[in-house]
Length: 277
Figure 1 (cartoon, helix red, strand yellow):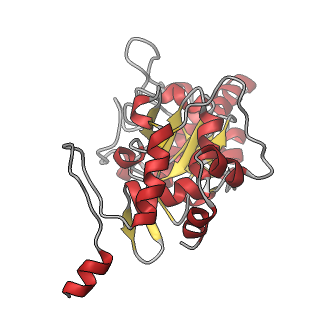
Figure 2: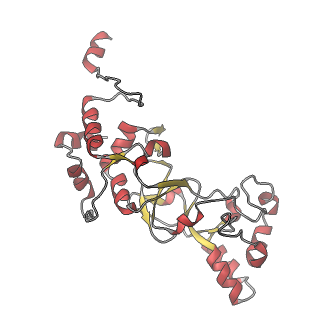
Figure 3: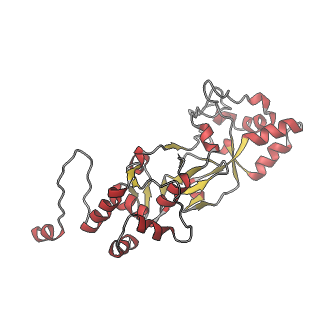
């Protein structure tokens, strides 16, 4: 045992009160290179929030066939138009991949509870076709904890308007760095997060890279789930140091990983370590 400790030990000076992690020498060297040039995401102008919690997905998340049925049940064109605007496309964690997503044709009935002093709650009486659909689930939606002013309304969501903004979407539980950029106004369910930033596309490329997948999982923090899964915890993610881009900087989509390695001065030996995981 003493020989093993002598051969495998690493040195930590404990010079600050910050949290620490035991790393191999090569992991330490990668960590130092990232920290030397990056700014922790907690010091960026970003917002990270959970997706929508309906309290009864079977009532509020519907497929395209059910959406069309609800629209066909509208009594006139005016009701159909406002109903169509209220039913929004939604992504689940399993739909989000590295650099993109595969939409499963699911929709959220966004009977939101408004934003205090800004947007009024949805009045279900203005949406008879939606009300008729939700009434079929009354025994469930009326008893749920996650509800708004009425059982027809979703719970309060102060950042509701952020779903319409260009954003990063990513699953909380994953087997890889699955970060996608969305500018189509998708909502996401409670298994995902949205990240709002003026540099959303740049951050999406960075966080999806092999370097930052390795950095999050092996160096800065992760919660492992089984043999291959892990969790992108919000409080751990914001510790990642990322280089702030210049106004003129733009990734070449042909080889993101090589560009990232160059930005952070990652050596061939370090790349080999990263890509062996």
